[in-house]
Length: 60
Image (cartoon, rainbow, N blue to C red; front, side, top):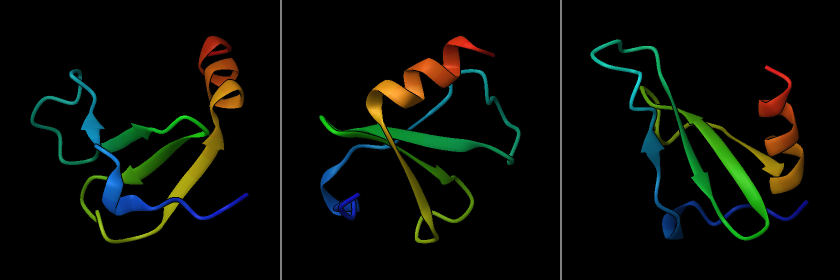
């Protein structure tokens, strides 16, 4: 999978995260859904194919 250009995507935090500091942020591109730790936005990013990420959420 190609690297995600993190400078060009818009990150969002779950509306359910509230004031809890332990959150993840997600960003969607046409090819991938990216996930990162909100406390470490310059840290590692996980990138999943859009269809795989959607399928994983449906199983929760």
